[in-house]
Image (cartoon, rainbow, N blue to C red; front, top):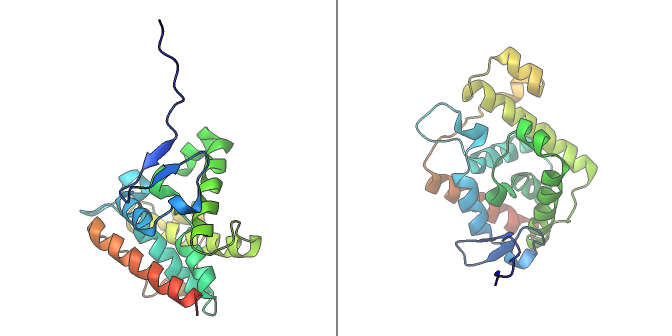
Length: 202
C-alpha cells in the first residue's frame, strides 16, 4: 500500500525554537535574535566581495539606517526602525540578487511582503510601509548599494552610477563599510534595533 502523500514542508525552525510558517507567517513567531543572527550570516552580492569576511545583510541594514539619517535627520525613530528592517525577511529567505528575483517572478515578492508585514507588526510598525517612506528608504538602499558595489564588489564608479544612480558625493563623507565576524555584526544589529525600539516607545 502506497504511503499517503505529505504536504511539502513550508516552515523553518529557528534557533529561538520558533517555527516560522513561510506561507502564513505570524508576528508571534518573529524574534529579533533570529533576525539578527540570520542577517549576520547572509552575504550580500552572493559573497562576491573583497575582504576576509563576507559583507552581511546585517551590515548593509546598519549602513542603510546611517544613510537614511543623513538624508532625513529629523526622521522619527519608527521610520528609522523601518529602514533598519527593510531587508529583514532575508533572515529566512536569503539575499536573492536582482537578476534571480526577476527570474523567479512575482511569487518571490509575495513571500517577501508576507514576511515583512509580520515582522513590522511584531515590532509595532504598520504592516505596510507608506509610499513616501518606502521611496526614502529605497533611495538610502541604492546609495548603500553604490558604495558596496564600488568598494567591495569590483564595480567601477561609472558602472555603479549606471546601475544604482550617481549619489551625492558629499553625503558619502565619513561613511565606512564594515567587514567583521558575524557575531560582531549580529551584536551591532541587535544594539541598533534595541536603541530604535526604545526611542519608538518614548
